[in-house]
Image (cartoon, rainbow, N blue to C red):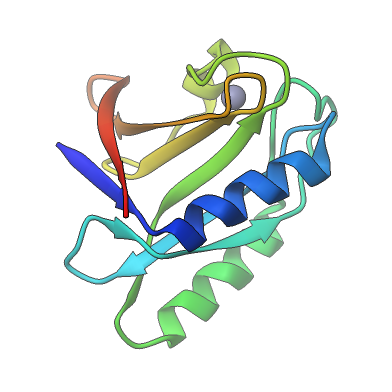
Amino acid sequence: MAVTFTQDAFEQIKSHSLKERPIEACGILTGPENSRQISAVVTCANVDENPRAAYTIHPKELLQVIDEIDATQGIRLAGFYHSHPFSEASPSNVDRDRAAWDRFIYAIYSIPLDLLKCYLWDDEAKIFHILDVISE
Ligand SMILES: [Zn+2]
């Protein structure tokens, strides 16, 4: 399975990640309904108590973003992204422990590798399936 990122969405993730370094940047992925495309992102604040090693989107901010997406015709919430300022683009143990959105995309951008990887969370099996990332 593959997920497609527009150049715009990819650049937004990259620039947000560089701006927040040395802490992890995080946000929401959105795209057209009934597609596997990510066309835009919503940047969020990382309110984790250890933001260099993990990320937390404040529940209030998350709800607000979800409301905005729900109010926008034809756009869906596709998943989440966050950056790894010092490590590769693989899920950490914390990322695994906290993953909760079944069948949603979790994208990780590694700053040192300049690499974006995407995973689909399977909440029943409690595993991330790696997805192919296509940029257009
Ligand atoms: Zn992580």
